[in-house]
Image (cartoon, helix red, strand yellow):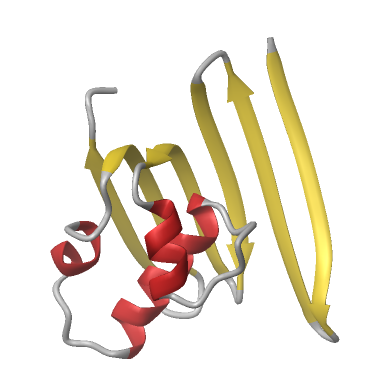
Length: 113
């Protein structure tokens, strides 16, 4: 069984946040976009709760929003090496982040997928 869920909401005028979630059995794949940063995420983070607090995210934020915020922190406070962000993430996961404004691609894979 495959489930596709689409959520669209306006955070503030002129800002559209989109999130898609595809679930098949226990293999979870999520897609989201915020501020022209797109993220495809597969897997789960074991330390999602503590990371949401660290990045000041809402309790209902998922892995996609967390990875986008971590990427934005990396981008805006450079020069941080990419492994600085990934080393704080715990779990089995893979993700691809595309930043349209800089045409940057950030890819990470940490798991037994």
